Image (cartoon, rainbow, N blue to C red; front, side, top):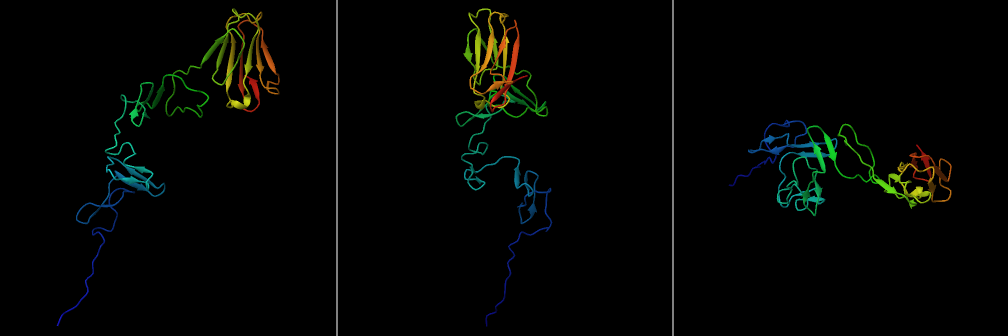
Length: 238
């Protein structure tokens, strides 16, 4: 006669029922069916954020469904990821490779961001906080002329050489609706002859004004006029 019975297989990892490692550490089998955790591999359930410290490798590794894969994510083993330039250089994409230049650096010891070159004020928004650093010098573009011109969004300081002008110099302001709110112009008589060769700042679009006037005149030697735009329809003196 054969004997029959039941066998129970426990497929749960053995060991302590309590979580191992620091808070939020992801649990894994450390060998011999024992739970373990590490501060290098964490999951924050409040933010759904996984933190991994160390090297992420694997040629077939897929992260976040298929949004970021090992074949396209720089920093993954096998995909490159060597920093470009010298120490403290910020990185940018230069033809699918990392690059860096001495013009843009971040000193992680002093938390200072340094930029040498030109900032395009028309596309620069927000603020530079003292908690992340500061710029030692910001240089605004200067345009010099002795004849009438139409200003554009890239002009900032407009220097008028009235000593060589043959007539009054008319500066036509662009359509205010095409400028960002706060865009400003500094108009300066550098020639010191505005009493003989007036500088006229005029709105080029009918109905737009400068402090309620369609045009303003500088007629004193070496005088200056500063105006800003509301980005809607008007300019104002400041």
